[in-house]
Length: 334
Image 1 (cartoon, rainbow, N blue to C red):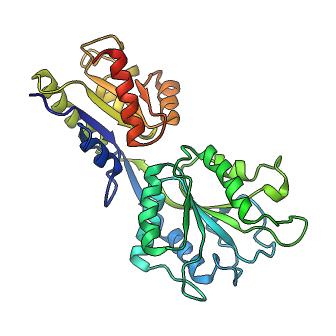
Image 2: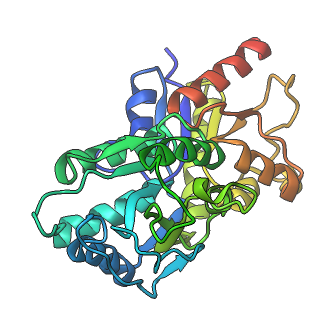
Image 3: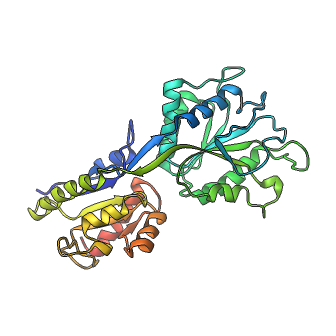
């Protein structure tokens, strides 16, 4: 009897629960996590975020001054807002984890009533929304979460334009009162599609939303990634040779690590005499297939390495990956 098909997830396993492990373990796969990214939290900037809560930046009663650690895209910090920030944006689980670590270690102070402010939390993708929901339920029970089904930053930006502007329907930018900014917790490397969309000068001023970014983590490739990945791939391919299982699927979650992955697999520009997993869709002897979590990583593989991933998830979720794999294998006849 063959073993469950292996699926290698090039990501750090989320804590305390990982939706990918839960989904694939209960749907006939054997998931293995191979961390690619090393994350370092910016404790000073996280302390600044905590200070925003302590000083009342999210409360209507208090107006605070601007911190030098935030990257301002707009100029309404001196506009006379009743409060500095009216909501927060999270587009990665790492940002949620950084925020969570700060809260777990230091607590989350509130003034003047010591009650959590009823603020909207905007997120992109179901995995980040789940991580944020756990945090919200424990520390910010009055907060609301929006964007779990957004899928990407562009869609989330449009959602915020509709939802957040709807919270401030009487905003008039010809007076000294404007809607408060949104605080965006980001990594050192990020795309700027959300700030650009929310503050597009072509948009009526009353519909623009100011965004302040603050870097709460930085990311780099782990030194141990290639060796770890090579060891796991070798063991899985040996099981295939021995007839214990079918092809191996590798799921890629970001451009970081793509080069190392292709080098280990001997794919793309690293196709060589030592390893030949095979590239043809009709090649029944193919050993390894590649799926990407979304179009950004798919396009990076194609544009940087001339490599076409076999599957690109239509939605960045375990279900999206599984559906893409099933369609691909059905067409292939496996």
